[in-house]
Each structure stands twice: as structure tokens, then as C-alpha cells.
Length: 484
Image (cartoon, rainbow, N blue to C red; front, side, top):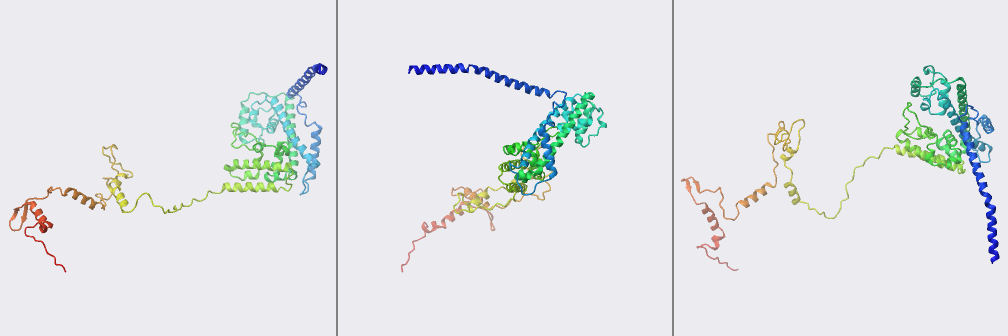
């Protein structure tokens, strides 16, 4: 047991001694990485060299020449027969994939050449790069202007919008730049020519991909069209890359910041190649933001179907397009007409609030009078009379206003008036024994004229003529009823 432990410790020591050389190897690897970083920095610094060949290397590569030759031959042959579907083993499918990667390389090469042109031409017209943002437009304008100082002699019509041409002309008259030397100008013009050549090569590649999109991506082409589908696939770097891309990024493929008269860079809607689709163009302006989101989502689904060869016939893409069309029509429909609200279903339960004559009498008792109605009304174009004058105090409304056609307000006859009169009489002439103030001791007779009488004598005679005369009379007797 002791020997085995000793042997294990010795083995560990030997392994440690063997691993002592590893740090040197790691340092060597780090040195190699640093050397690679230095080479990358040297490559970046080489972009600023005066030699254009050290900047632009794509056109001299054998891969570029082979792919462009095959593309030109395929364009001369024309389109394939209908009903065929490109598979991954097909050489034309491989050519389409290579074209997609080449189009990305061409765009990167154009950006590099654009930086070269901008660095050289900045001495002549430094403000031009802030006015013209697109690399191809910038190269065309630089080639057109050259060393010309008076831009009124240069025809930029067809290269830029009219508003941008005006801004460029005004800015050129106040620029601080100086004419370039002949050698620098020649290199700049050559770089412009290379950029334009690469742009034309890119158009050929996209044209070839567009002619084959019905076979490589039938569902995507059914939704957005072959032209837009080829641009989406080319910008994304292939159909597989497009299928892996989220819909929000598909919407921005090909987006360019619009320059409004050389001043504002604000764009109301961020949309790229999908702006060129027929569905987007035929939709009203307020609904385009919603349409482009639906188009991006369905295009992503169609690209995923095409990437796995799910539906070679393109039926899924046509169904997606029909669904989008129905959605747009539904959004444009007017709102439904407002129907009259039906009466509620009568319930058989008794109500908590009583109705009938008593409630009608209560409403009549607290009803608004005609005078209050006139007080609450306001005449048009006339000043309201108030209790304190000059608009102060309580307003009288239309009370007392001339031109109403009525001398006085006729009060409506209330059904409660007789009842109120009866109650008033009962309170005034009750059984309290009080004498009415209207009674008098003078009586007018036709014989003697005015006669002095007792007002209470008449009342006493009335008392004696009633039941009192029957039961309490001195001459009255009990009546005897005969039984039959």
C-alpha cells in the first residue's frame, strides 16, 4: 500500500515536469494571435494607401471571374422550364447560393471603394459626403463634377433629385475645398469606375437570381414577387440566412435613410425592399405600417418553408398572399351602422317605487311653473335684466321682456288648488268657537232697512233645529212604534 502511494506521487511529479513546457507554447500561441492582430491592423491601414489595387481586390479574384462568367452564360440560356424545382444537388442551385454570397461581397467592396473615393475627394468638396449618402450616387456625382469649380456648368439632372441638386450647387459655391492634383483626380475617377462596374455586376447577379427565384423560393416569390424576393435573399446572404432572420429584421432589409432636401433625415416608416411590393403600393397610406409588418412576418414563414423544401408548388405562399389581401380589405371596411337600441325586456317583479294617482299628484305639486320656465330662458341678442342691474344679482331671464306677445303670464290651472282651498277653510273655520271676521251685527232688510241683529243667534237656531231639537226639546215626546 505504501509503495503504491509513492508510485502515484512520483507519476504526478513526472506529469508536472512534462507540463512545464506548456506555458511557453501558450505564450507562442498568444504571440501568433498578436501577430494575426498586427496583420489585421496592417490590412486596415492598407485601405488608406494611394494604390487602388491594394484597396479593391475582389475584381481580380478568380472566384469573382468564374461566378460572373457562369451568370452571363445562364442569362444567355434564359429561364428554365416551368414545373422544375431546384434542389441542393443541382449545379444551378449552387450557383445561386454563390451569387448570394458574391452579392454581399460586392456590397462590402463598394463600401471600401466609397471610403477611398471620399478620402481623396474630401480635399476638393468636403461637404459632398454629407449631402449624398449612397455610395453609387456619390461615385457618379464625383465622376461628373471632377475638378469643376462652377457647378452651374455641370448637368446633374438624372443623378440626384432636384432639391438635392440645388443644395449641392449652393454648397459648392461656398466650399473651402481646392482642386485636386491630376494624379489624385485620376485615381479617384478610376475608383468611381470600379464602383460603377461592381454595381452593374451586382445587378446582373440579382437579375439571374430573380429569374430563378420561382424555382428556389416559390412561396416567397408568390408573396412579394420575384424581384423583391431576390433582393431579400441577396441582402440576407442566402435563403437559409433569410429563414433564420426574425421578421422585424426582414422589414429593414434594404432600408436607406431618406435625405429630404439635404437637411432632414427623418423617415416616417422604416421599410426596405418590401416597399417595392405590389401589396404595399396598393395600400392606402394610413395602413402601410400594418401591411409591411404582416408582409415581413409572412415572408419569413415562406422563406422557412422554402428552405426545407416544404411546398415546391408555392401554394402556401399564395394562401399567405390571399390572407394578407383579405386582411387589408377588412381594415378598409367602414364601421358597422349603429343600430337603434331595443327596449329592455319588461320584468314581472314589482317595482320599489310606487306609481298611480298619488305619484302623479306628487309630481304635479313640485312641477316647475310657467314663471320659472320664463326665468330660466335666455333671449338671443338681448341683455338680461337682473335684480341689481349691470348683470349683477339674480337674473330674470325672459321675464318682463318686450316682444314676447303676452301681456302677462297665464298660470295653468292646478288640480291641487281646490284641495288647498278646502284645507285653508278647515284651518280658518274649525270647531274652535272663533267668530269669522267677515260677520257683522248689521243686517239689511226690505222693511226696516238696516237692523241690528245678533250674529250668533243664527248659529244657535241651527243647533236647535238639528238633533238637539229632537232629543232635548221641551215640547218633544218619545215616539211609540207599533209592532206588527
